[in-house]
Amino acid sequence: MVHPPQLLLTAFLVTSGSLAACPTADGLLASLATNGYEPRTLPNHRTSGANGPPVEVRIQLYLAAIVQVDQKQQLLSVEGYFRQEWSDERLNSSAGVGDCEDAITLDLPVRGVWQPDIYFDNSIREWYGVGSMRIYPDARVWRSVRFNHLMRCPMSFHRLPFDTQRCFILIGSYSWEVSKVNTSAFSDGPVEMPEGYDGTIEWELVEVTSEVTTEWFGTGIHRKGYKYVTIYLSLQRRSSNLIMFVFGTAIGFSLVAYVGLFIPKAAAPARVASSVIPVLIMLNLQNNVTNQLPALSYLTWLTSFLVSMTLFTMSTVFEYGVVSVLMQVEARKIRKFEAFKRLTADAHKRAEEQEVSISMEDIQKTDAAVAYVYKLFDSDGESGLTLKEVQSGFKALGQHFSLDQVKETFVKLGVEGHRMKKEDFHRMLKDIDDYMPGKNAFKLTFWEREPADQVDIVFRWAFIIGLVLVTLLWILFR
View: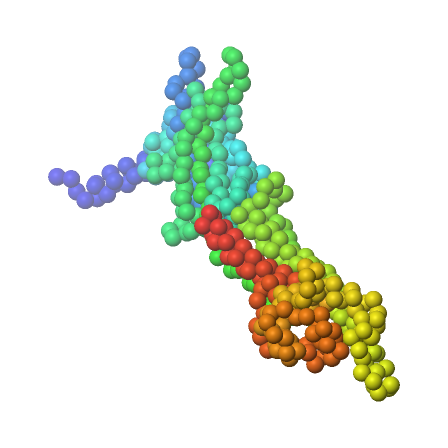
């Protein structure tokens, strides 16, 4: 029968022997240095001849966060923990790690243990922080280090602000070809992320995928393949900000330019302001968007829409220029009419001073302007003036009346039928103000309006229809 004290002694001796056999971290490195371990030689190296199979190096990134997406420079900044795992049987034979019950932890950097030269192919800037290496009893090595890297990320902005960018992280061995080092992913995938993480304020992380490929370099007998793990991060832009503050603002100020078309054409300062200010707003929006992007050789969805809205708002400036020219033409016609009225008024004044009436012959002799005016009315040269001819004659003098208003003049003159005789016309000239039709008594049709008003009306319809169509097309084909 074995007594309890003997059992305790036996357990103590077994435990002491086990602890003594497992080296400390410093003891491990010292054993490797004194027992012929070569940290610059691959774990599959055989002194007897041919090397063993390729060293399986598994990698994984724990992406703690996407720090920044720089779309102007087309760069992606990420941070997290870079993990690697491989097996090195020499650690057991040279340092006796197989006698340990748990892993041995070493603080990075570790100089005396072989480590794969894994690098980030598309990195622009790299930073590594604290890390550790754990060596397990089965000679498996696990390495983890904190990192913050800046990566190249080629981007396409054709569908801005509805674009999705597919950034990548390319990881592989720098020196060892596929026959010596086989780079692959952890069994649970090459990427881990915090639960619920969905990207940044501006970009939503919608998908993370990966693939393992072999890239070939060199030619002929020098052609070698290298294994790479590629991680793809699909980032979709959160477009609500640009839609609200750029797209919406562009439509809003285009409508401001449209409403300005209803300001009376004679109010030049107001019309010019309502046309020019939206143009300046559009240019400011364009600059705001393009300043956030690289120098592109193509238009994006958003910038092309802004260019369209800029053209719409600029068209109101040119439209008012046309209206101003037509107003000047009308003003010259009105000056002719006023001069003609002064002519008849002078004739009446002379008649009143002499206390005689003006005869038709006197009116005809008043000035050649009277004959000129009659020719403006008598377009066909036939006897008498029709309603249409009288209307056209007044229009030539800058007076725009409807046919119903012209009929009012015929009634005042007592003209029978629809043709005014020459004597009736001269009688009208004697008291032009009395026989002129009322200004606002009747509604003018489109063709009876001033040319400037016609341009305004046509342009209002063309502007709003074009604005609606362009906006709908951009929305439908985004």
